[in-house]
Image (cartoon, rainbow, N blue to C red):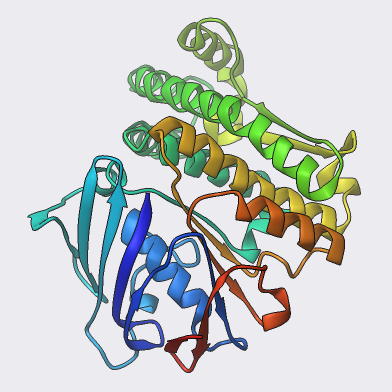
Length: 358
Protein backbone atom coordinates (compact mmCIF):
# COMPACT_ATOMS: atom_id res chain seq x y z
CA UNK A 1 0.00 0.00 0.00
CA UNK A 2 1.35 3.42 -0.89
CA UNK A 3 0.17 6.97 -1.34
CA UNK A 4 0.71 7.90 -5.00
CA UNK A 5 -0.24 11.58 -4.86
CA UNK A 6 -1.77 14.04 -2.43
CA UNK A 7 -3.69 17.31 -2.84
CA UNK A 8 -4.30 19.65 0.10
CA UNK A 9 -6.33 22.86 0.12
CA UNK A 10 -7.01 25.09 3.12
CA UNK A 11 -5.79 22.44 5.56
CA UNK A 12 -3.96 23.95 8.54
CA UNK A 13 -1.43 26.39 7.00
CA UNK A 14 -1.45 24.72 3.56
CA UNK A 15 -3.41 26.95 1.20
CA UNK A 16 -2.84 24.73 -1.82
CA UNK A 17 -0.37 21.86 -2.13
CA UNK A 18 -0.15 19.07 -4.68
CA UNK A 19 2.53 16.40 -4.52
CA UNK A 20 3.53 13.24 -6.29
CA UNK A 21 4.66 10.90 -3.50
CA UNK A 22 7.68 8.68 -4.26
CA UNK A 23 7.95 5.14 -2.87
CA UNK A 24 10.31 4.37 0.01
CA UNK A 25 11.53 7.01 2.45
CA UNK A 26 10.18 10.54 1.91
CA UNK A 27 11.33 13.29 4.28
CA UNK A 28 9.69 16.69 4.80
CA UNK A 29 12.32 19.15 6.06
CA UNK A 30 11.66 22.57 7.52
CA UNK A 31 11.84 24.81 10.55
CA UNK A 32 9.20 24.63 13.25
CA UNK A 33 5.68 25.88 12.40
CA UNK A 34 6.29 25.76 8.63
CA UNK A 35 3.78 22.99 7.89
CA UNK A 36 5.75 19.74 7.68
CA UNK A 37 3.77 18.06 10.48
CA UNK A 38 0.55 19.38 8.94
CA UNK A 39 1.54 17.60 5.73
CA UNK A 40 1.83 14.24 7.51
CA UNK A 41 -1.37 14.94 9.41
CA UNK A 42 -3.20 15.47 6.12
CA UNK A 43 -1.91 12.15 4.78
CA UNK A 44 -3.05 10.40 7.97
CA UNK A 45 -6.47 12.07 7.86
CA UNK A 46 -6.91 10.80 4.32
CA UNK A 47 -6.84 7.21 5.61
CA UNK A 48 -8.38 7.59 9.08
CA UNK A 49 -10.77 10.57 9.05
CA UNK A 50 -9.17 11.68 12.28
CA UNK A 51 -6.21 13.63 13.60
CA UNK A 52 -3.88 12.34 16.32
CA UNK A 53 -3.26 15.94 17.39
CA UNK A 54 -6.76 17.38 17.98
CA UNK A 55 -10.16 15.95 18.89
CA UNK A 56 -12.26 18.19 16.63
CA UNK A 57 -11.94 19.16 12.98
CA UNK A 58 -12.29 22.90 13.42
CA UNK A 59 -8.53 23.57 13.96
CA UNK A 60 -7.76 21.70 10.74
CA UNK A 61 -9.48 24.27 8.51
CA UNK A 62 -7.23 27.16 7.52
CA UNK A 63 -8.15 30.51 9.06
CA UNK A 64 -10.59 32.35 6.80
CA UNK A 65 -11.86 29.23 5.02
CA UNK A 66 -15.08 27.31 5.67
CA UNK A 67 -13.73 23.91 4.66
CA UNK A 68 -10.51 22.10 3.93
CA UNK A 69 -10.18 19.66 1.03
CA UNK A 70 -8.01 16.56 0.82
CA UNK A 71 -7.61 14.30 -2.21
CA UNK A 72 -5.25 11.45 -2.77
CA UNK A 73 -4.82 8.14 -4.53
CA UNK A 74 -3.74 5.11 -2.56
CA UNK A 75 -2.45 2.07 -4.40
CA UNK A 76 -3.33 -1.17 -2.61
CA UNK A 77 -3.04 -4.86 -3.39
CA UNK A 78 -6.74 -4.88 -4.28
CA UNK A 79 -6.59 -1.83 -6.56
CA UNK A 80 -6.44 1.95 -6.47
CA UNK A 81 -8.54 4.00 -4.07
CA UNK A 82 -9.22 7.66 -4.84
CA UNK A 83 -10.10 9.32 -1.52
CA UNK A 84 -11.75 12.76 -1.49
CA UNK A 85 -12.63 14.54 1.75
CA UNK A 86 -14.22 17.87 2.55
CA UNK A 87 -13.31 18.73 6.14
CA UNK A 88 -15.85 21.23 7.45
CA UNK A 89 -15.22 23.57 10.36
CA UNK A 90 -18.83 22.92 11.44
CA UNK A 91 -21.21 20.16 10.44
CA UNK A 92 -20.63 16.75 8.91
CA UNK A 93 -17.71 16.13 6.56
CA UNK A 94 -18.14 14.69 3.08
CA UNK A 95 -16.09 11.62 2.17
CA UNK A 96 -15.96 9.72 -1.11
CA UNK A 97 -13.90 6.71 -2.19
CA UNK A 98 -13.75 6.09 -5.94
CA UNK A 99 -16.73 8.42 -6.31
CA UNK A 100 -18.99 6.71 -3.76
CA UNK A 101 -19.96 8.29 -0.46
CA UNK A 102 -18.64 6.92 2.84
CA UNK A 103 -20.70 7.34 6.01
CA UNK A 104 -18.62 5.68 8.73
CA UNK A 105 -14.93 6.02 9.51
CA UNK A 106 -14.44 2.27 9.57
CA UNK A 107 -15.72 1.97 5.98
CA UNK A 108 -12.73 4.03 4.83
CA UNK A 109 -10.32 2.35 7.24
CA UNK A 110 -11.15 -1.02 5.70
CA UNK A 111 -9.74 0.28 2.40
CA UNK A 112 -6.68 2.33 3.34
CA UNK A 113 -4.49 2.17 6.45
CA UNK A 114 -1.79 4.30 8.03
CA UNK A 115 0.08 4.44 11.34
CA UNK A 116 1.37 7.77 12.65
CA UNK A 117 3.88 8.61 15.38
CA UNK A 118 3.86 12.09 16.94
CA UNK A 119 6.06 13.44 19.79
CA UNK A 120 3.00 13.47 22.05
CA UNK A 121 3.11 9.65 21.92
CA UNK A 122 5.70 9.90 24.68
CA UNK A 123 2.66 10.01 26.98
CA UNK A 124 1.98 6.35 26.18
CA UNK A 125 5.13 5.52 28.15
CA UNK A 126 5.37 8.34 30.68
CA UNK A 127 1.74 9.50 30.93
CA UNK A 128 -1.42 8.30 32.63
CA UNK A 129 -3.28 4.98 32.14
CA UNK A 130 -5.83 6.72 29.91
CA UNK A 131 -3.01 7.54 27.45
CA UNK A 132 -2.13 3.84 27.24
CA UNK A 133 -5.79 2.84 26.93
CA UNK A 134 -6.09 5.24 24.01
CA UNK A 135 -3.16 3.48 22.34
CA UNK A 136 -4.76 0.09 23.02
CA UNK A 137 -7.91 1.20 21.22
CA UNK A 138 -5.98 2.79 18.36
CA UNK A 139 -4.06 -0.45 17.88
CA UNK A 140 -7.21 -2.58 17.99
CA UNK A 141 -9.13 -0.39 15.55
CA UNK A 142 -6.15 -0.07 13.21
CA UNK A 143 -6.00 -3.85 12.91
CA UNK A 144 -9.77 -4.41 12.85
CA UNK A 145 -11.75 -1.22 12.11
CA UNK A 146 -15.07 -2.89 12.98
CA UNK A 147 -13.88 -3.01 16.63
CA UNK A 148 -14.77 0.67 16.86
CA UNK A 149 -18.44 -0.29 17.26
CA UNK A 150 -17.82 -2.35 20.43
CA UNK A 151 -15.78 0.45 22.00
CA UNK A 152 -18.42 3.07 21.23
CA UNK A 153 -21.18 0.82 22.60
CA UNK A 154 -19.17 0.17 25.76
CA UNK A 155 -18.53 3.87 26.31
CA UNK A 156 -22.27 4.62 25.96
CA UNK A 157 -23.17 1.85 28.43
CA UNK A 158 -20.49 3.06 30.86
CA UNK A 159 -21.78 6.65 30.76
CA UNK A 160 -25.37 5.56 31.39
CA UNK A 161 -24.39 3.17 34.18
CA UNK A 162 -22.23 5.80 35.89
CA UNK A 163 -25.05 8.33 35.65
CA UNK A 164 -27.41 5.83 37.28
CA UNK A 165 -24.96 5.18 40.12
CA UNK A 166 -24.20 8.86 40.62
CA UNK A 167 -27.84 9.97 40.80
CA UNK A 168 -28.98 7.16 43.10
CA UNK A 169 -29.21 7.70 46.87
CA UNK A 170 -29.27 4.93 49.43
CA UNK A 171 -27.52 1.64 50.21
CA UNK A 172 -29.36 -0.51 47.67
CA UNK A 173 -28.63 -0.90 43.97
CA UNK A 174 -30.41 1.64 41.75
CA UNK A 175 -33.31 0.31 39.66
CA UNK A 176 -32.23 -0.64 36.15
CA UNK A 177 -28.60 -1.36 37.07
CA UNK A 178 -28.87 -5.02 36.08
CA UNK A 179 -29.91 -4.05 32.55
CA UNK A 180 -26.85 -1.85 32.17
CA UNK A 181 -24.70 -4.65 33.60
CA UNK A 182 -25.72 -6.79 30.62
CA UNK A 183 -24.70 -4.06 28.18
CA UNK A 184 -21.45 -3.43 30.00
CA UNK A 185 -20.51 -7.12 30.06
CA UNK A 186 -21.37 -7.75 26.41
CA UNK A 187 -19.51 -4.80 24.93
CA UNK A 188 -16.76 -4.65 27.56
CA UNK A 189 -15.82 -8.28 26.96
CA UNK A 190 -15.54 -7.56 23.23
CA UNK A 191 -13.28 -4.56 23.92
CA UNK A 192 -11.07 -6.59 26.27
CA UNK A 193 -10.77 -9.46 23.80
CA UNK A 194 -9.90 -7.07 20.97
CA UNK A 195 -7.23 -5.28 22.99
CA UNK A 196 -5.74 -8.61 24.00
CA UNK A 197 -5.49 -9.82 20.41
CA UNK A 198 -4.04 -6.48 19.29
CA UNK A 199 -1.28 -6.64 21.89
CA UNK A 200 -0.53 -10.29 21.05
CA UNK A 201 0.22 -9.06 17.52
CA UNK A 202 1.89 -5.76 18.39
CA UNK A 203 3.97 -6.51 21.49
CA UNK A 204 6.56 -8.92 20.02
CA UNK A 205 7.03 -6.72 16.96
CA UNK A 206 7.45 -3.59 19.08
CA UNK A 207 9.97 -5.44 21.23
CA UNK A 208 11.88 -6.53 18.13
CA UNK A 209 11.96 -2.97 16.81
CA UNK A 210 13.22 -1.71 20.18
CA UNK A 211 15.97 -4.30 20.23
CA UNK A 212 17.03 -3.19 16.74
CA UNK A 213 16.96 0.54 17.57
CA UNK A 214 17.99 0.65 21.24
CA UNK A 215 19.84 -2.63 21.67
CA UNK A 216 17.89 -3.83 24.71
CA UNK A 217 14.60 -5.63 25.41
CA UNK A 218 11.22 -3.90 25.69
CA UNK A 219 8.48 -5.73 27.57
CA UNK A 220 4.91 -4.93 26.55
CA UNK A 221 2.09 -6.59 28.53
CA UNK A 222 -1.63 -5.85 28.45
CA UNK A 223 -3.09 -5.65 31.97
CA UNK A 224 -6.85 -6.13 31.72
CA UNK A 225 -9.28 -5.25 34.48
CA UNK A 226 -11.11 -8.51 33.76
CA UNK A 227 -9.34 -11.75 32.91
CA UNK A 228 -10.37 -15.38 32.54
CA UNK A 229 -11.07 -18.14 30.01
CA UNK A 230 -14.66 -16.89 29.70
CA UNK A 231 -14.52 -13.10 29.75
CA UNK A 232 -18.25 -12.55 30.13
CA UNK A 233 -18.48 -14.88 33.14
CA UNK A 234 -15.42 -13.23 34.68
CA UNK A 235 -16.88 -9.77 34.04
CA UNK A 236 -20.20 -10.66 35.67
CA UNK A 237 -18.42 -12.15 38.68
CA UNK A 238 -16.22 -9.04 39.06
CA UNK A 239 -19.25 -6.73 38.91
CA UNK A 240 -21.03 -8.79 41.57
CA UNK A 241 -17.95 -8.69 43.80
CA UNK A 242 -17.59 -4.90 43.52
CA UNK A 243 -21.31 -4.05 43.62
CA UNK A 244 -21.30 -2.64 47.17
CA UNK A 245 -18.15 -0.59 46.50
CA UNK A 246 -19.71 0.84 43.33
CA UNK A 247 -22.86 1.89 45.17
CA UNK A 248 -20.77 3.65 47.85
CA UNK A 249 -18.38 5.30 45.38
CA UNK A 250 -21.10 5.94 42.77
CA UNK A 251 -19.12 4.85 39.74
CA UNK A 252 -18.23 1.73 37.77
CA UNK A 253 -15.09 0.07 39.10
CA UNK A 254 -14.76 -2.87 36.69
CA UNK A 255 -14.16 -2.94 32.94
CA UNK A 256 -11.86 -1.85 30.10
CA UNK A 257 -11.86 1.74 31.37
CA UNK A 258 -9.66 0.40 34.20
CA UNK A 259 -7.15 -1.38 31.93
CA UNK A 260 -3.49 -0.48 31.56
CA UNK A 261 -0.45 -1.42 29.50
CA UNK A 262 2.71 -2.44 31.35
CA UNK A 263 5.95 -1.33 29.70
CA UNK A 264 9.44 -2.21 30.91
CA UNK A 265 12.89 -1.40 29.51
CA UNK A 266 15.72 -3.70 30.48
CA UNK A 267 13.46 -5.33 33.08
CA UNK A 268 12.55 -2.04 34.83
CA UNK A 269 9.21 -0.25 34.68
CA UNK A 270 9.53 2.35 31.91
CA UNK A 271 7.36 4.99 33.54
CA UNK A 272 9.51 5.05 36.68
CA UNK A 273 13.01 4.23 35.49
CA UNK A 274 13.40 4.80 31.73
CA UNK A 275 15.39 7.80 30.54
CA UNK A 276 13.86 10.29 28.11
CA UNK A 277 15.66 8.62 25.18
CA UNK A 278 14.57 5.14 26.26
CA UNK A 279 10.98 6.30 26.71
CA UNK A 280 11.01 8.07 23.33
CA UNK A 281 12.34 4.94 21.61
CA UNK A 282 9.71 2.81 23.36
CA UNK A 283 6.84 5.04 22.21
CA UNK A 284 8.22 5.10 18.68
CA UNK A 285 8.70 1.32 18.60
CA UNK A 286 5.13 0.73 19.76
CA UNK A 287 4.02 2.48 16.56
CA UNK A 288 6.58 0.56 14.48
CA UNK A 289 5.34 -2.69 16.02
CA UNK A 290 1.75 -1.77 15.25
CA UNK A 291 2.67 -0.92 11.65
CA UNK A 292 4.34 -4.32 11.26
CA UNK A 293 1.37 -6.13 12.82
CA UNK A 294 -0.96 -4.22 10.49
CA UNK A 295 1.14 -5.13 7.46
CA UNK A 296 0.81 -8.81 8.35
CA UNK A 297 -2.94 -8.45 8.94
CA UNK A 298 -3.65 -6.80 5.57
CA UNK A 299 -0.84 -8.69 3.79
CA UNK A 300 0.88 -5.53 2.52
CA UNK A 301 2.74 -2.61 4.12
CA UNK A 302 0.62 0.22 5.47
CA UNK A 303 1.59 3.88 5.13
CA UNK A 304 3.91 4.84 8.01
CA UNK A 305 4.07 8.50 9.10
CA UNK A 306 6.67 9.67 11.63
CA UNK A 307 6.78 13.22 12.96
CA UNK A 308 10.22 14.25 14.25
CA UNK A 309 11.18 10.66 15.15
CA UNK A 310 14.92 11.30 15.62
CA UNK A 311 14.81 14.22 18.05
CA UNK A 312 14.64 12.10 21.22
CA UNK A 313 17.37 9.68 20.14
CA UNK A 314 21.17 9.74 20.41
CA UNK A 315 23.24 9.48 17.21
CA UNK A 316 23.65 5.70 17.44
CA UNK A 317 19.91 5.10 17.79
CA UNK A 318 19.19 7.59 15.01
CA UNK A 319 21.44 5.63 12.68
CA UNK A 320 19.86 2.29 13.61
CA UNK A 321 16.34 3.71 13.25
CA UNK A 322 17.24 4.92 9.75
CA UNK A 323 18.35 1.39 8.87
CA UNK A 324 15.10 -0.07 10.22
CA UNK A 325 12.98 2.39 8.23
CA UNK A 326 14.90 1.77 5.00
CA UNK A 327 13.73 -1.85 5.09
CA UNK A 328 10.03 -0.93 5.28
CA UNK A 329 7.49 0.17 2.68
CA UNK A 330 6.53 3.79 2.12
CA UNK A 331 7.51 5.98 5.08
CA UNK A 332 6.88 9.73 5.36
CA UNK A 333 8.96 11.59 7.93
CA UNK A 334 9.08 15.17 9.17
CA UNK A 335 12.42 16.45 10.50
CA UNK A 336 13.72 19.94 11.37
CA UNK A 337 17.01 19.87 9.45
CA UNK A 338 18.79 18.12 6.59
CA UNK A 339 21.29 16.48 8.93
CA UNK A 340 18.54 14.08 10.04
CA UNK A 341 17.61 12.92 6.53
CA UNK A 342 18.46 9.20 6.12
CA UNK A 343 20.61 8.19 3.18
CA UNK A 344 18.70 7.53 -0.03
CA UNK A 345 15.52 9.38 1.02
CA UNK A 346 13.51 11.70 -1.20
CA UNK A 347 13.30 15.20 0.28
CA UNK A 348 10.55 17.82 0.41
CA UNK A 349 11.44 21.31 1.62
CA UNK A 350 8.59 22.93 3.56
CA UNK A 351 8.31 26.65 4.26
CA UNK A 352 5.25 28.74 5.11
CA UNK A 353 2.81 26.02 4.08
CA UNK A 354 4.49 25.55 0.70
CA UNK A 355 6.24 22.33 -0.30
CA UNK A 356 9.04 22.02 -2.86
CA UNK A 357 10.60 18.68 -3.81
CA UNK A 358 14.36 19.08 -3.43
